Amino acid sequence: MKKMIGGIAFGLIAALALFFVVTVLTAEGQERVRGAAKRGVEARDMGRAERLVTLELEHMDYRPAPEALPQGAEVSVLRGDPRTGPYTLYLYMPENYQIPAHWHSDTETANVVTGVVHFGPAEGALTPYHEGAFLVVPARHPHRARCLSKGGCIISLSRGSAFDINYLNPADDPRRQLAPPAR
Image (cartoon, rainbow, N blue to C red; front, side, top):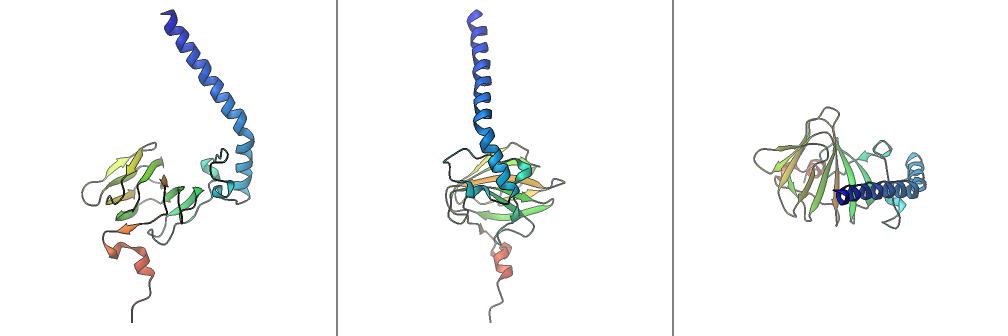
């Protein structure tokens, strides 16, 4: 019993020490990134894993999503560059927003940050995923997503390669709607 209590106490002390070290060591870096966010510097400009980078949700710099996504979404690039990869970004989807059935050429990981994201296969029922949910979407796996949450949804998306999206139904591709008619 004494060994078990001693082990628990040691674990608590180690956890508190780790928390203190992380807090102290990152305070300067956190302040620098917050200052950069206030000045409009994107997180990806802060370097690639050469140092710790932290951003608070309220300091994210959102911009309109690429034309490949339905209008209304916004993105905040946290790390890397979606044009070349690897990257991590936050995707904001307003209430009632949906991304039709599509697939990507590389595996994608997603975390639900805020709201409830309804996710599922190209056909069939969507499953609601709440804040904190983690999903791994294999390459070329047809899927779709929808946000019904009041106030919208934010998901974190990460990939090891450049962003691409391939719609199962070409008529769903917003880029086709932007293209001038053929003569």
